[in-house]
Length: 225
Image 1 (spheres, helix red, strand yellow):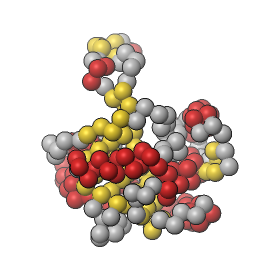
Image 2 (image 1 turned 45 degrees about the horizontal axis):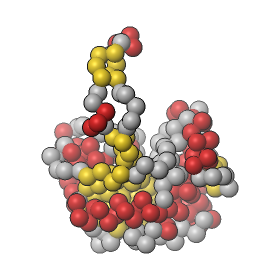
Image 3 (image 1 turned 180 degrees about the horizontal axis):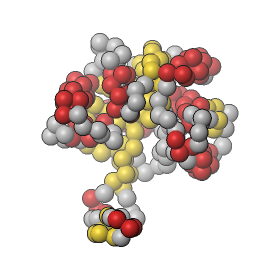
């Protein structure tokens, strides 16, 4: 069984006070609905656990009902950090789950094709993340905006979601993160800390995360709205 954990419990601080980007309108749907529909339409996903802010539980259930998300099994409250929200979702996956896909609800350009590709690769490799190559020159910058070095862009990738894992592997990884009291920026980092390999699923198409108001325009253009 493949279960998706869609995480939309962030504070949306860069969108402005009092704004929850997951529920902003993008065309005729809220941002969150686009992500949920991609998992709903993927034949490789069996169930969805949605993690949102505690004050948005009712609104999130309404979105699921309004857009016919039949695979939505549970809607739960998130935590203070992204990793806390993911772990809250992990606690709610069905006991038959073998593969878990973690996705940022603020990435509305995700497609069912990408979801299925990641799900299939996880069954062979155990840990897979969507990503795209970086072609810009990347600088390491220190104090006073002074360049310290230039990174080797041949080895650099921008990592996205969904990120897929054998569920036991991800549970073990987060148990170690909690034990060591480490803060991670994505789920793959938790697995990497165990010394386990993570494979990239190359996805060159736009898969932007909505972070600032201008990102909504980029997403709308990518979705041809």
